[in-house]
Length: 377
Image (cartoon, rainbow, N blue to C red):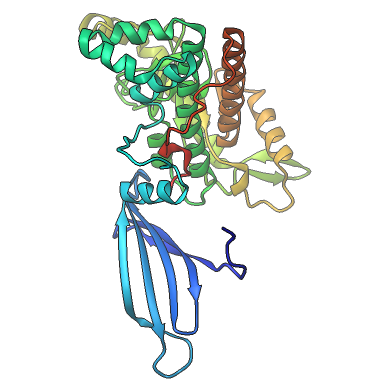
């Protein structure tokens, strides 16, 4: 069925932090002689963390104006709405994901159930047969472990993890490119996802007030047990770099953030041995606090308002600044996101190679509906 031709009008309404409304988007569905139809999608949540807690999709019909020109937008002739999961169900229905009659279950990508389904599809095992076998025996962990031990099963598991991580990177990128996003929202988005910073880290330290005076944003644990402190600043830094005579140099906010990180490292140097013993004796956690390093994560090239500055000029200014630092590195959110995306692309290639060796053509190629196939509302 072909859609009707014509102009498509879409509009955005800004949010209101006091009411927790992030904003809404509207679309014109019909502009007829007797009726005007429109749909509105609104999101609500926590303005401090950026977490979306509720979404509403409303459909409204307005009649023609009693004065004979335009429409009466003050009076809604008919209206109905759906929210949260109901919106996703409607989207799935419109995209014809329910080709056969029957009962369906929603499976979230990256969840345990989603990973198991990916493994089953890759290995060619019938889900119903497995379900009956588990009902009789009940050793779910052993079955899943056995499936993941096969090349195809392992590739399917890796694909599920990579897909979940791509969602984290996409959300982080969206926040970093949005003007006005603060460091609190960025920290909530990064969370415990230490892999964003590279493969040499094994986790995030459980206690973030490592020293008596300081509280660290993200204390990463290196593979050798040493610490790497990440100091977060917001991505919206208009004066990330500035012109000084004939060259570009980093702005004052970068210098202040680096000085803050240097003080953190000095405190760890001075208090590290005592704190190291305290953590091990009292909490049973071993951290090597000798000669820790730090990264300052700050700014995004899209938000720099310096005239005639280019991405290359920004990178060169920061690289020049970093070349004179020893234990501290300055990194932009654009660099972090792009590095994570390259790493995930590399991991996808390995997973695909492993799958091709196992003799399977694709992972998860089925008509199973997955709500994560849709972009976030």
